[in-house]
Image (cartoon, rainbow, N blue to C red; front, side, top):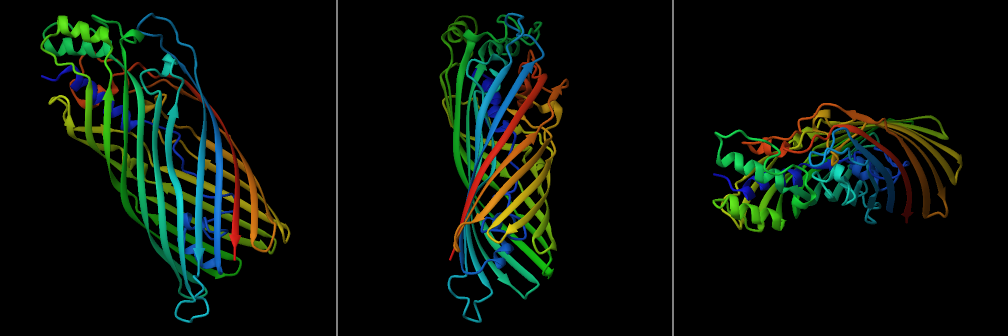
Length: 467
């Protein structure tokens, strides 16, 4: 018969690895970075774009998105019947890319002149949310949730002829997971009582009312794992004013060692000792292996130069996020033998992003850029929670680039995101008096229905050095 800790751990692992908030899907680099070229950071979107660079170029881009989000829960607290204050978060979200492309000084040698070598470091996927610790509207979903993928990408490009360039490389990836969440031990004790006496009527709020702040315990989870993938790209330039680009990142399954620590409030320990003596309730510590799936990313683009001073670029990015729906956690060691392996569900749809960019050369040393971007929601409504939120996002970006010297180019940009609010009325999450499967236990939470809204502005700057 499962222990209270065993039941709690099913939920804990679901929280740790199923949470995400507004995953990044935007192209890596500045507004002047395109799949057909622009600067060395183009190598993430399409490594074959290296063929447009002569000599050596180092490109750096950094931006911060200022995210402001609100959640107004539609249902009152099960503990006192009161409606909860609106939960608010203010979260800066950084994006960083650093890339170098070079011909290694071999351009004078016939056998090497068409080769390019690149290395980039990026953060292509970043999920997470940090809600105020005293915000009871998001209390049992997460205080802190983070899922970050770092990527190091060494690539080699070859220009077959003046029309076609190709490139291949590796994606060396690190996945970092971190979570802090409050666990409702009142609910877990109620569930344990139902499990011990299944013939008795089970009540989700007996003997303890749910959402009692005095019966919460902090759960801390963290882990870092490594994986490998491959990348490739194609650039076709049939005329000087027209170019096509296509690239793919294979993604990977990364084994992430997970450490879990769970503190249990004294009132819960005392009650279990007196009324449920057959249940083991130690302070939980566990180690496991989580299989974190980094999705496939496919990018494509077309650039047209209708005027010598004007470049128009259309791009598309597809991320196979539905591939991450199942997460497999294998427990390696615990302080109780009753914690079993888990199959956890993280429901997402594939992510499509579409963008159009116009770059106009005012004078040879000054360029202006305007970009519109559409990124539809990837989260089905029934899986919305305060830490698994996504929206339909539409962004308008402005940028200016200045060729300060022959070898230094600087740019700045600003983006505003237009984000329609989401009123969630249907949810798979609901209080369950006696969950019997890992999936049911993962959904056993306060109803997260209500109004979700967000506002985001993004500020970025970049510098490229050519020599």
